[in-house]
Amino acid sequence: QVQLVESGGGLVQPGESQRLSCAASGDIFSINTMRWYRQAPGKERELVAAITSGGSTTYADAVKGRFIISRDNAKNTVYLKMNSLKHEDTAVYYCNVNIWSGFGYSAREYWGQGTQVTVSS
Image (cartoon, rainbow, N blue to C red):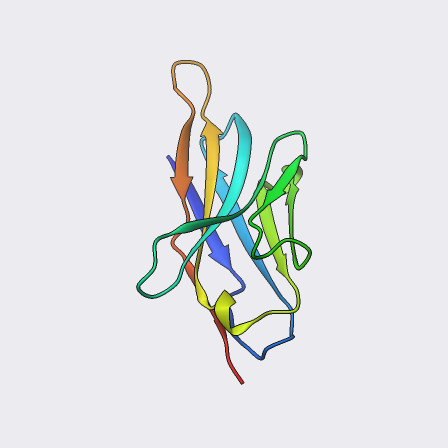
Protein backbone atom coordinates (compact mmCIF):
# COMPACT_ATOMS: atom_id res chain seq x y z
CA GLN A 1 0.00 0.00 0.00
CA VAL A 2 1.16 3.47 -0.93
CA GLN A 3 -0.40 6.75 0.09
CA LEU A 4 0.15 10.22 -1.28
CA VAL A 5 -0.82 13.20 0.84
CA GLU A 6 -0.92 16.66 -0.68
CA SER A 7 -0.84 19.96 1.17
CA GLY A 8 -0.42 23.64 0.52
CA GLY A 9 -3.43 24.69 -1.52
CA GLY A 10 -5.65 27.65 -0.79
CA LEU A 11 -6.62 31.14 -1.86
CA VAL A 12 -3.95 33.56 -3.06
CA GLN A 13 -3.95 36.87 -4.86
CA PRO A 14 -2.56 37.36 -8.35
CA GLY A 15 1.18 37.81 -8.32
CA GLU A 16 1.67 35.95 -5.07
CA SER A 17 3.47 32.66 -4.50
CA GLN A 18 2.43 29.33 -3.05
CA ARG A 19 4.10 25.99 -2.49
CA LEU A 20 2.46 22.60 -2.81
CA SER A 21 3.80 19.44 -1.23
CA CYS A 22 3.08 15.79 -1.89
CA ALA A 23 4.47 13.17 0.47
CA ALA A 24 4.52 9.48 -0.35
CA SER A 25 4.48 6.79 2.31
CA GLY A 26 3.98 3.06 2.59
CA ASP A 27 5.54 0.23 0.59
CA ILE A 28 8.19 2.21 -1.28
CA PHE A 29 11.38 0.67 -2.64
CA SER A 30 12.14 3.42 -5.13
CA ILE A 31 10.47 6.46 -6.62
CA ASN A 32 10.85 7.28 -10.28
CA THR A 33 9.32 10.28 -12.00
CA MET A 34 7.18 12.62 -9.91
CA ARG A 35 4.66 14.90 -11.61
CA TRP A 36 2.16 17.63 -10.91
CA TYR A 37 -1.06 17.87 -12.91
CA ARG A 38 -3.90 20.34 -12.66
CA GLN A 39 -7.52 20.41 -13.72
CA ALA A 40 -9.50 23.61 -14.05
CA PRO A 41 -13.32 23.60 -14.12
CA GLY A 42 -14.60 22.39 -17.46
CA LYS A 43 -11.15 21.50 -18.70
CA GLU A 44 -9.13 18.32 -19.03
CA ARG A 45 -6.39 17.44 -16.60
CA GLU A 46 -3.06 18.72 -17.86
CA LEU A 47 0.56 18.06 -16.98
CA VAL A 48 2.16 21.01 -15.21
CA ALA A 49 5.65 19.79 -14.35
CA ALA A 50 7.70 16.64 -13.94
CA ILE A 51 10.97 15.67 -12.28
CA THR A 52 12.86 12.44 -12.84
CA SER A 53 14.74 10.45 -10.26
CA GLY A 54 17.89 12.07 -11.60
CA GLY A 55 16.52 15.55 -11.12
CA SER A 56 15.73 16.46 -14.72
CA THR A 57 12.71 18.71 -14.98
CA THR A 58 10.14 19.60 -17.62
CA TYR A 59 7.39 22.21 -17.54
CA ALA A 60 4.26 23.10 -19.42
CA ASP A 61 4.72 26.24 -21.49
CA ALA A 62 2.03 28.00 -19.44
CA VAL A 63 4.09 27.78 -16.24
CA LYS A 64 7.65 27.80 -17.55
CA GLY A 65 9.69 30.44 -15.76
CA ARG A 66 7.13 30.80 -12.94
CA PHE A 67 6.83 27.33 -11.38
CA ILE A 68 9.61 25.21 -9.94
CA ILE A 69 9.31 21.49 -9.26
CA SER A 70 11.69 19.85 -6.82
CA ARG A 71 11.96 16.70 -4.76
CA ASP A 72 13.41 15.56 -1.47
CA ASN A 73 14.25 11.90 -1.88
CA ALA A 74 14.95 11.44 1.81
CA LYS A 75 11.39 12.51 2.56
CA ASN A 76 9.76 10.90 -0.50
CA THR A 77 8.27 14.30 -1.21
CA VAL A 78 7.75 16.38 -4.32
CA TYR A 79 7.16 20.13 -4.23
CA LEU A 80 5.73 22.68 -6.62
CA LYS A 81 6.71 26.27 -5.96
CA MET A 82 4.35 28.53 -7.84
CA ASN A 83 5.40 32.13 -8.36
CA SER A 84 3.69 35.07 -10.05
CA LEU A 85 0.36 33.28 -9.88
CA LYS A 86 -2.33 34.22 -12.36
CA HIS A 87 -6.10 33.78 -12.40
CA GLU A 88 -5.69 31.08 -15.02
CA ASP A 89 -3.62 29.00 -12.59
CA THR A 90 -6.79 28.35 -10.60
CA ALA A 91 -7.34 24.59 -10.57
CA VAL A 92 -7.21 21.44 -8.52
CA TYR A 93 -3.61 20.30 -8.44
CA TYR A 94 -2.76 16.59 -8.29
CA CYS A 95 0.56 14.91 -7.71
CA ASN A 96 1.35 11.75 -9.63
CA VAL A 97 4.22 9.53 -8.55
CA ASN A 98 5.69 6.42 -10.16
CA ILE A 99 6.66 4.03 -7.38
CA TRP A 100 8.22 0.59 -7.28
CA SER A 101 7.35 -1.38 -4.20
CA GLY A 102 10.10 -3.97 -4.62
CA PHE A 103 10.71 -7.36 -6.17
CA GLY A 104 7.55 -9.11 -7.18
CA TYR A 105 5.82 -5.84 -7.95
CA SER A 106 5.57 -3.75 -11.07
CA ALA A 107 6.16 -0.03 -10.85
CA ARG A 108 2.88 1.83 -10.95
CA GLU A 109 1.57 5.35 -10.71
CA TYR A 110 -0.24 6.73 -7.72
CA TRP A 111 -2.33 9.89 -7.46
CA GLY A 112 -2.72 12.36 -4.65
CA GLN A 113 -6.14 13.43 -3.47
CA GLY A 114 -5.89 16.84 -5.10
CA THR A 115 -5.60 20.28 -3.56
CA GLN A 116 -7.49 23.38 -4.68
CA VAL A 117 -5.52 26.45 -5.66
CA THR A 118 -7.58 29.57 -6.23
CA VAL A 119 -6.01 32.75 -7.55
CA SER A 120 -8.34 35.68 -7.00
CA SER A 121 -8.24 39.29 -5.94
